Length: 110
Image (cartoon, rainbow, N blue to C red):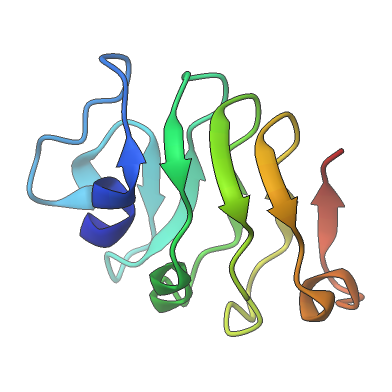
């Protein structure tokens, strides 16, 4: 999560100051303190998503829509628990083929 934090230009609306990401208001974790949800919708965030997002192995629902995130969407094929990917209304320039071929994933984007 620290790598994701470093790759994004967060606004004042996003308080990720606590060293423990599970205490961040826009992040949910399971009982093992593994990140399961990230809620950063409509926050005016800029930056890029890093391949290191794959290290969040329990991530199921990242909501990152209506921001200014750009660049390619990283290969997220290692996120086997991923259920819904909300990335619409950003500035992404490519989507990995592996991502679009997943039958258990609901993609939301334009």
